[in-house]
Image 1 (tube, rainbow, N blue to C red):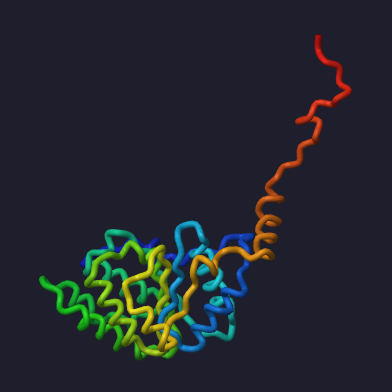
Image 2: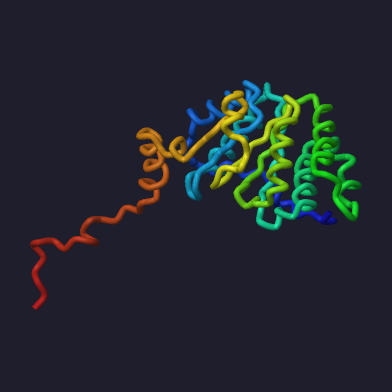
Length: 233
C-alpha cells in the first residue's frame, strides 16, 4: 500500500462558469439516485461533456439545503490498476467525507500478501452500513482500469453495497459488468453519447454563450475594400 496519496485525485471538479445547463439529464440522474439505483454510468467518448455534466449534478446536490448527500471523488489513472494502490485510493476517497469507511483496511492492505478482495470489500461495505446519510462515490475515467481482478471485485462491491451508498462512473468504454442484469433489476442509471448530444435549444444556448460573445467586432471596412476606393497606380 502506498504511504502517501496525491490529494488532487480527490478534488471534485468545479462547475465551469457559463457552461450549458442540462436540466433534462440532471433530472434523469437524480431520479435514479432517488429510486435507489446502485450504479450511475456516464459512458461516452472523449469530448462529450461527461465531467461537465457530473460537475453540474454535484453542484446541484451540494446546493440543495434539504439534502444530506455527501460526495466523494476519485480521479483514476493507469497506475491505479495495481490492486493495493486502487484500494488504498478508494478508501482514502471515502475517508475525505467520513473517517468510518475502511478503518480495518490499512492493516489488510499492508499485509505481504493481500487477502481475497471480497474480504477487503466486505470490511468497507460493513463500515458504509453504519453511515446515516447518502454517499455517492464518483470514479472518474474508469476506462483506464483494465485489471480483471479489480473489475470483478468492484462488481461484487456494487452488488452488496448498502442502500445508503451509490457509485457513479464516468468512462469512455462500458465496464465489463453485468449491465443487462442491472438494467433488468432497475439498478442502473445510464447517460450515453446520444443523451449528451445537444438538442436544438441547448445548441442555441451554447452558441449564444460561447461563440457570439467571443467574437470581437471589427468594422467591415477593415476587411472589405470599398468598390469606390480608387485603385492605386
